[in-house]
Image (cartoon, rainbow, N blue to C red; front, side):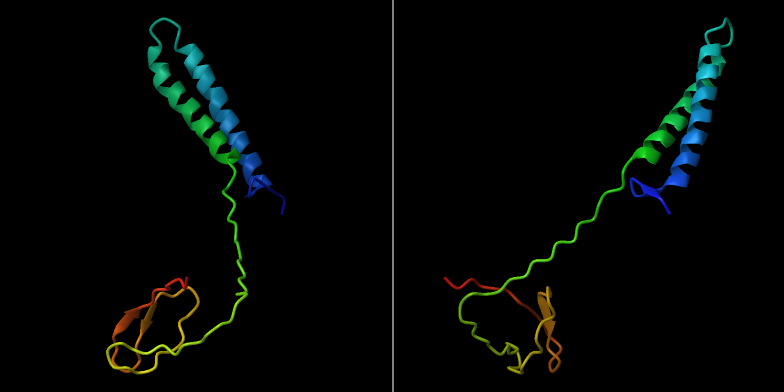
Length: 120
């Protein structure tokens, strides 16, 4: 399937075709509204123009790209491992999941917030 701006090319072509019909019909009604005693045609022409132009803008608007950035960090110094203990019951805590900042103690059920303190 051919994609353009993140959307299917067939969908874009159909949307632009439908929008061109709306815009042309809206232009005809808007021009016809300037004849004497036919100003009510503006109530039809202007919404048709707006709808057609809205479809064109939506069809041609590119979808935002989602970037995934992976950062790998290799510490250059000596690594000291430390066992995490619950401050309430002093039981050993399981290792935290990557990116998690809260651990639940499996023994007492309390939740502990993990903060990383820099070593200067």
